[in-house]
Length: 272
Image (tube, rainbow, N blue to C red; front, side, top):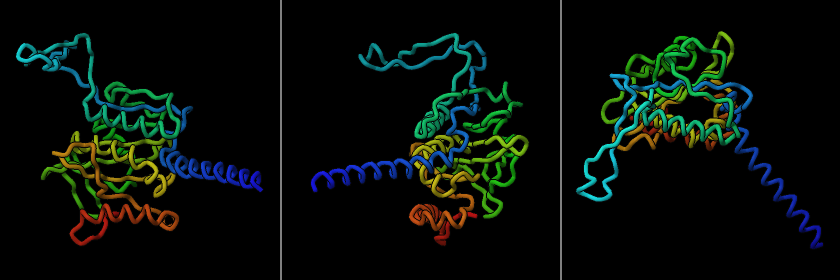
């Protein structure tokens, strides 16, 4: 009897772990799509910043470890052709974290939108606004959101979102290139805080997004406080969720509606 009980307990534990692994990993793989596949090349388009003089020299502050002798001291680095904005680097880190959750770790390259603006033969991810991001908006028209210079426009909701009144907005969008069917992603913001919050939300809510959207194209907009920083994000709007996913994941859908409803004076969620 004791042996049978031990075998049953062992089998139950194995099944529990398998179920837990599948229930957490499969939604993440589904929503990431080609980003979860090591054999498919992925290009991360990130703006490369440089000094106006293009001399490759940058300055940074030295820690004030023995004041006043170390107060206000500067050091420098040279022969640096370009740097990334902190918000973009943070969003890249969050994206790598999200891909790492499903075992994606290779065949990834960071490129400059200036030198690779015509390249579309891979999975494309735009971190922060750039010419490449504008081109993606021109290619796709079915994500429910438009970029108008300094604002996100939601035609179906008749809303225009701008980074004002101490708030910034970030966009996470998964689309398909109509020319070659490669996936295209946007992780961008109206400002630097928006970009940072978009990456932060993707990393921390990957399973939620997988449960709601699966392998389908989608778009979500998150809102963050300029004073609080980009390491926070509240869902403001999302593209439509298929009816059967609402039935399969009612708790996730209720959570999303609850997050969004607080941005509306009527309590109605901003979704298509």
